[in-house]
Image (cartoon, rainbow, N blue to C red; front, side, top):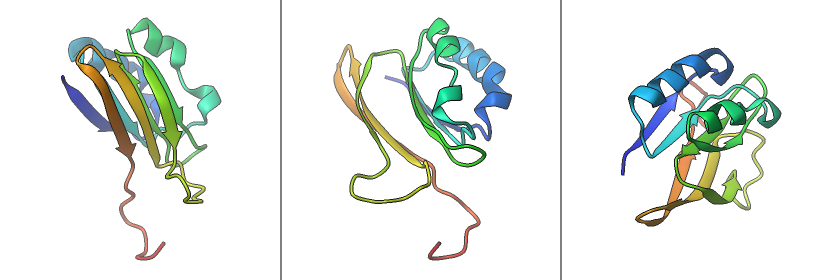
Amino acid sequence: MQLATWNINSLTVRLPQVLDWLAANPVDALGLQELKLVDEKFPYDALKEAGYHGVSFGQKTYNGVAILSRSPIRDVVRNIPGHSDEQSRVIAATLDTPQGPLRLVNCYFVNGQEPGS
């Protein structure tokens, strides 16, 4: 199984590069960080055409994470249960792979913030 992660710093801007990269590197799952778009703007159709299921936890202008998978995705959890954070930085899901279920957690860890923020 091949997994990859990519801080794309705007999925809207870099969708063509993501699709080209997936065509050249058909990984089983890809975690994306810094989507910088809301869930309603997530390019589900384009990713489906490329052979990927997708789930997102978006946020306008900042943050945002997603999981793309060639296998079906279920049991999606957005954010850390019990933790009230307005930042979209954590998403988890179970991928129903041919090898069996795989729980994948994708996180965006911000750099450059003040300690304690």
